[in-house]
Length: 236
Ligand code: ADP
Ligand code: MG
Image 1 (cartoon, rainbow, N blue to C red):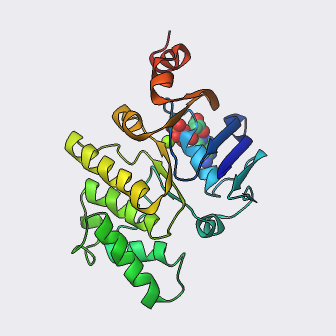
Image 2 (spheres, protein in one colour):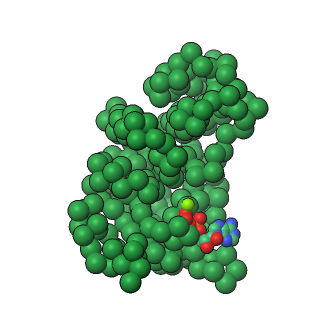
């Protein structure tokens, strides 16, 4: 399997944030992850990207065991993430921010810069290279996050609530952009999202997390009509 988490558990003190999680993603596939607040979705992404080491279980990517890799090594093997809490420094310019990503692939600025510029263009922020992150609006900032992640040239990209806080017209534009990433670069996507329109529109498979455990997996139609899922969302 291209990407595989096997029986991953991660606790914080007495709190089991992820319990016995197993996930499979094929090359180029678009997979969703949904679940109520506090279910453990962001924790899963931080474990995949090397910011947490799991208590038990394993993670493999392209046939390699990456369970204990540090974040920079995760980025080098081809996994990148846009985080729920912005990782961009407001004092940096857009170009500087995206360059940070591009340096994951290239040591020399002469090579990293064209890659950064390509990704800034790709997300539709061409012309704003010198603008400080603090001066970008919410939508632009989200696109900047995306450009920085894309500049690491990921084969698997994790998106943690990228659509949160966007108005409906922006959601549609972002959805087109995310589809284009998958189509043009063949990037597999693993998407945490509350905006169900996004999950329904592009995912072929969806995992549902509740209290740290996966309670369902299937097509978007299957999971949204599943009784356990409806209960988890609406209570009983
Ligand atoms: P979600 O993204 O699904 O809303 P999180 O993964 O952010 O959920 O959080 C899952 C649970 O783990 C929550 O109860 C949260 O408070 C807890 N948690 C997350 N990160 C930490 C941490 N670094 N230290 C302690 N508890 C954490
Ligand atoms: Mg979260």
